[in-house]
Length: 79
Image (cartoon, rainbow, N blue to C red; front, side):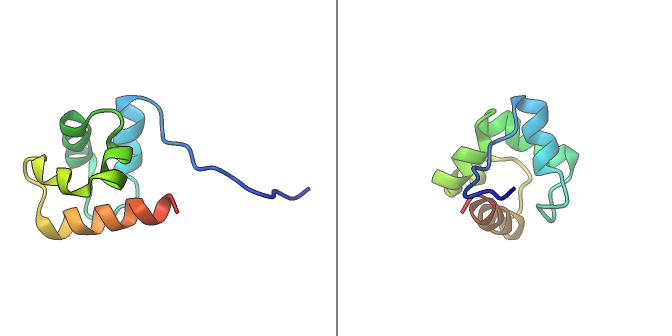
């Protein structure tokens, strides 16, 4: 059978979001940084990144280059 459409769903819970952010889909983000992102932005971190990417500046230790790449990658994942 064929799909006519699909909807990407955010991972559930803090651990799920951190694990997703630490995956190979997001270059430069490892487990420690992913956990820090979720601790700073909350369990809806992916929505926050999509809607207000400037909030990534609040994450301690997140370099500007990684921040920009992450924001771009998250938006692309959910287009």
